[in-house]
Every structure is written in structure tokens, then in C-alpha cells.
Amino acid sequence: MQATKLNGNYQVFWYLLLLTIAAMGIIYGNSLSGHFPDLRVWQPGNLLYLLLGLPFVLLQGKAGLTAAFPTDRQAAHRLLLPLFTGLLFGLADLLVIERLLTSGQHISLPAYTQPFPYSVFLYTSGAFEVEVFYRLIPITLVMLGAVHFKEGRYIPLAFALVAVLTSLREPLEQLPAGPVWFVAYSLTTGFAMNFLQALYFKKRGFAASLVLRLGHYLVWHVLNGLYIEYFLLKAG
Image (cartoon, rainbow, N blue to C red; front, top):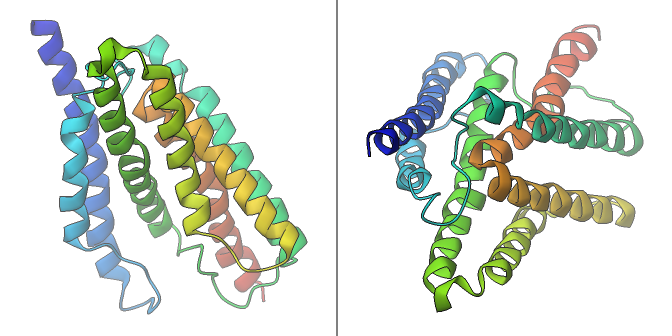
């Protein structure tokens, strides 16, 4: 009982830490908004929405899923592969969009970037929000139902369905304009990344799916934006 309570406190701690980073981003963003008219800044209401996910980090065991956050060093090492996977997806987007699609020509920061180092806060919080509502809540709810339906007979089918459906959401919501090849690329890589996140979520926990997205955002949003802001725009 004591070990369960300690583990629950540990899970809550990491979730609240991510909320704290998001709150810091709001404060930091508001302090910069006068200097950057197009700055994207969260509202405090975003934090309230994210609180909806907090109970779900405590329900992973009951849903037959891995703990949301790793509880030992060995488990933490299992986050390295998701991180590396996310970095590869980010590098792919960098190559395809900045080189093949736009040839890296910019006269201002593009919409998919923000001023550095504020971008670190915004995209960390953005990755957290996406993973809460694309994976943590829907997958946990479905698996909780599957565990208690027909003595868990349909758990594999339930997970397969929720993994596919949650993996389709982002690429369909962000369906881009442009050449057919680029639309196909976006749909394919968007689905593939989200599906891998669902698998990692089940096998390695919420932190694994989050770390994968953070790896992608680090390359595509943060480092790409830093390069554009400090090397392309200032050099021009």
C-alpha cells in the first residue's frame, strides 16, 4: 500500500512539473508579447484543461498500461529510443519542408516556429497538451473499458482500434495544402509517428509518447526556428 502511494505521488509530481513549465511559459510569453506581435501565448485556461488528464496518470495500472512516468533508472533508459525516433521524424520534416518544399527561404519567422528561447516553453507545453488529449485520456478510457468487458477478451482489438483512430486525428486535422506528394508525405509520416507513439504509450508509458513528440518538436520547431531567427534572418 505504501509503495503504491509513493508511486502515485511520483506520477503526480511529474505531471504537475509539466504543468509548472506550461505556467512559466505563459508568464514568459506575456513578458515578451509587446516585442513580438505574432507571439503565440497560452491562456491560464489551458492549464485548467490539462488538469483533466491528472487523474488518468493514476489509472494506468487499472487499464493494463505501463506507468505514465518511469519509476527507476532502468525504465528511464527506455525513453532513449522514443527520443531518437522523434528526432528522426523532425529531421525528415526539416529536409522535406525546408529543403524540398520551400528551399529554406524566409523573410520572417514562419508560423511553425517562435522566438528562441521562448519556443522551448511553448513547444514543450504544446507537446504535453497533444499527448494528454491524443493519447493519455482516450487510450486510458478505452483500455479501462476493455479490461472490464467480457473479462478482457477484446483488449488487443480495443487497443488496435484506439491506436489507429488516435493516430489518424493529427494528420487529418493538420492536412496541408500543396503538391500531392507533400500531402501524401504529411499523412503517412503523421500517421506513422502517432501510431508509434500509441505503441510506446502502451509498452513504455505516457512519458515515452511525450518524449517522442518532444524529440520531433526539438528539431522541427525549436532548433529550426533558432537557425532561421539567428542565422538566416539576422544574416540577411
